[in-house]
Length: 313
Image (cartoon, rainbow, N blue to C red; front, side, top):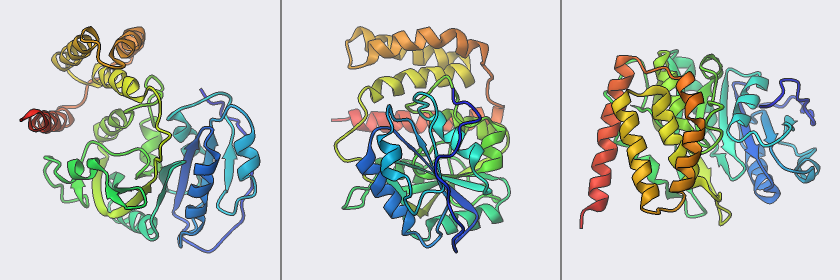
């Protein structure tokens, strides 16, 4: 876990722009990609403060980005913090809202100001999920269509489409709400960690909405993240164990066990790691309030319907 006293390694200066949104970036050993992200953030008309959490194994990233005009603060935790680096960045932010980017993603001009306007107007709104455009060709991320088709009913005090999911590098949070629920859960570390945060925000009464007028750019390139599918499988089981009713937990565990028995890639490792973390998940188990569980079930049915369509000849 990151120590609270991690010092900033780069100082910023006051610039004209929109003072409401900080951009938090987590990175690990991808200097060229991070520099491209910082260049794009520096060009935004909002001129947001940018906090970078460097999970790298050496000081190459520090030396490469120190003094970059976009950078307000560079935090160097001891060891790799995974998604928990976002928690560290939010704690250090001094603005009411925080937008997340990874070292291969950034925001289009005007999107941060629009997000801040929506958060200003809708006091129950805790998180805005943006439309994600991938690569130089600005292709639609598949999650956009899923969020746009959310089966959750419209809520009069929220903009856009109510959701219980989002992409971690394409969302803006109300700092107060994020900190109130504890941010990303330490048990998951990385990989599909967004669902649990969405559950916890909704459980405390915060609204989440998809707003396609907000646009984030994602340029993942060819680097990928080895082992990600395993982590997503593991964290799905842990998430339902932490928050969902026992029949949902048993079904998720059985699905993973069958995938492991069938030799599907990463499933055996995912099962092993889920079982290792099971006692900690049980100790922290807290089921969702009935309205949120109902919303989660609606989304379960939506996901099952998509799976059936994909499997159809």
